[in-house]
Length: 103
Image 1: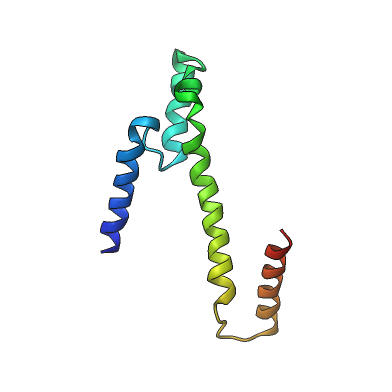
Image 2: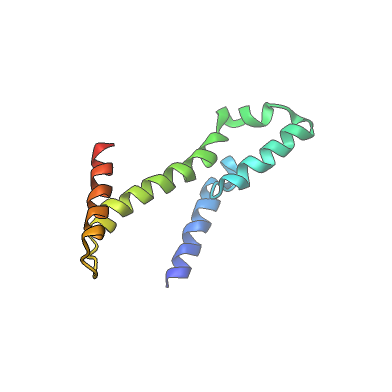
């Protein structure tokens, strides 16, 4: 069931956003063709089309990946029990928590 749901989510993103910005799942899928068309003769118009929409598919997955990593660390990794209760492992987890709390 999981592969089917992931496939459906990717399809929904592509169908809903494909016309606006060219299937914004991967930054390389949007930025590469824009750079090619800019070099091939269309100039900077490829970056100003659609009210400068091009940066959303480039920045969105990168920001989403960082947010997902922080959520994982905060809600899963920090609460995961370590089977080998060594002092080094406890200090490492404490250091990670302090680093996140300071930022």
